[in-house]
Image (tube, rainbow, N blue to C red; front, side, top):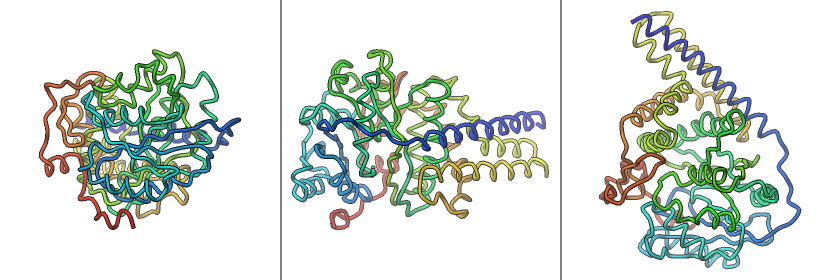
Length: 405
């Protein structure tokens, strides 16, 4: 199988070049100066909650002290039985001028997050809407840059680079490495080199009028990748563009397990294939040169193949380290970067999973995902809590006392 090994090694070399190109795009992007707004219109931050994640209380505290004069944060829960309900009430009591809480009204669609967003959007007071995930922390100037970008009428949606923070476990470190070395460079390169908008919904902002023109959150109530679909609709329906802010947001990983990391990206893989199509999805393997070099060494074991595998792994780790230094203070240590090859192999298994599976578990429900990430009611079924936690990669939440202390 030497011929196959050689083909895979060529693919790995192409992959290293592609990764280096993505990281160059990343560095050029983050070296820009963030824009400064001319005005400060009111902003409503919509933050759906589901369970008590690591660092939730600290995440909410960060949003209470943003450097912006007129904003609110509307927290959402599916019901008062949600473990996040006491934390949300705590935030509203501690910062009543900033926080309010809304319990979901009805269940208009199959996407649990969008069901909450429909209620949150109706409860919001302002015309600039920012959707922000519960495990996100931001810099104090977060809203000013968003507003500055939305002052351009040609911009219909603003999203952000993402960097990991707060990793306490190997799985959370893998997540941080992947965000810095693969996800954020990939999103920026798709935008700058291919003109393709890939919106990651951990942070996305748009005008209420533009959302209404798209059909509101109801337009994406039955798709699972609502962020990606909204980003596409901004161009196809509104004729506007997606802008990517300069300042990254921080995804707080906490105590995610390795199994949790794998489960998260298995779900991501299914969505990616259904959103991008099988051909484009399969081509993404070139962005995992460590996987290709490993397969090459397995296809035709030799000293040369093992040496090239080692060189590929070292080059990929070094490139990811350079990308991380652009996104987070201090980057990663050498010991942390040594995890990159293992992380890439775990992610490679998740990528292979996406080639053959169409079902995911999301917030306690198993869903079958069709083209465009559309889900059908007949395919939705509840999953027992323990199985749901295993399938989604959620570890046991911290005690409530830890969350609100």
